[in-house]
Length: 195
Image 1 (cartoon, rainbow, N blue to C red):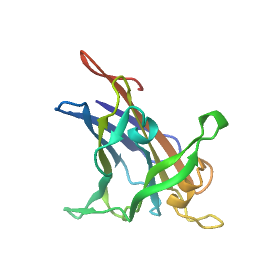
Image 2: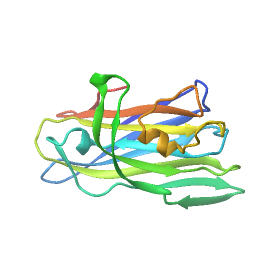
Image 3: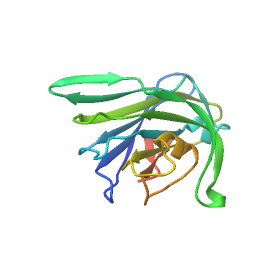
């Protein structure tokens, strides 16, 4: 099951995809993968950040963690492939949401990194496993990607600091897009709930 979004406004093309892979067993168990890929040069090469609201953080009555969140950043340059860990990957407590009824306070996972100038096929992923606590709950995970568009800002902050502040600044030095992965398991198979 996968969900994808491409932002085409003032930011170069970025594809964010979510995938759920069901693991056989007595209890319902899934591996969740969130992947991002720059379809073009991202333009300014500053800081990048990803905020991940896991399924078990969003719906703890239905799902629990079955392992820690892991991931890598990858790219090619001059015919060589490179992979690296995130500069930072861990949980932080934050409040997010522009409108009061949409606000969420919780322990989201954040990843901070940068992509190199001249890098091609710049991409990365975050993955984690979940297992069922109680039957009948959908899979509902969210990923927000923040890209630094320019160095012109005051006071200077990183993309991670901007995300931790809960900002959706579209006009300044950063641009954030959000994508959800929402599906449910039915007798016929998984059914995507959000386009």
